Amino acid sequence: DQQVKQNSPSLSVQEGRISILNCDYTNSMFDYFLWYKKYPAEGPTFLISISSIKDKNEDGRFTVFLNKSAKHLSLHIVPSQPGDSAVYFCAASGVRGGGNKLTFGTGTQLKVEL
Amino acid sequence: SQTIHQWPATLVQPVGSPLSLECTVEGTSNPNLYWYRQAAGRGLQLLFYSVGIGQISSEVPQNLSASRPQDRQFILSSKKLLLSDSGFYLCAWSGDRGWDYGYTFGSGTRLTVV
Image 1 (cartoon, rainbow over the protein chains, first blue to last red):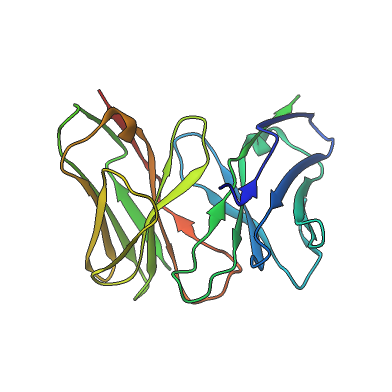
Image 2: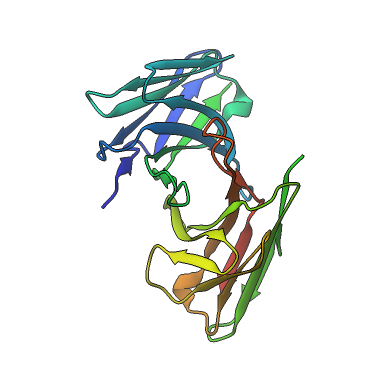
């Protein structure tokens, strides 16, 4: 049962354009969402997060949007740069005290082309 | 500042051999600790998590086990490796600082069972 889904395994965008990565979830108990970026043979690194009490969070070129009614979040990268090429994972949490477990999606491979 | 160390970086082991992967965290006390696996073409799957010394929760039945002999040490083991145990293993920690940053991951271990 995949509670966090990233239906696009890959995305290709031209440098300077907007990258939009999507994520859907099924568990209505999730109340915190995060995006991670992962390069090959490295551990994921935190990118940006959003609480369920917000619908938007912005950090530089990165913006995360949350639509709770649709159980959908998206990550916008503007402008996209070649160094953004990586696998992006969305993750969700709704458990407090139970080890703060994160449930990850399957990832989207972003390729930013020159 | 907090750091997380994971070793070895790569490992090639024959089927039926034992496994021991180690993870240590510095600069924090009583962290929540996690072992994840990324199999080829798949997302991040939570294997084990620990909220304290000797406290281990298993998320999926498998050929692996975990132990936490010290507060900041987390070990992933197997008595007899299977081919299906191949993958990229990640250790992570989280604290009680809220969900602004989620987990901090180690650099990972690439395990190939031959």
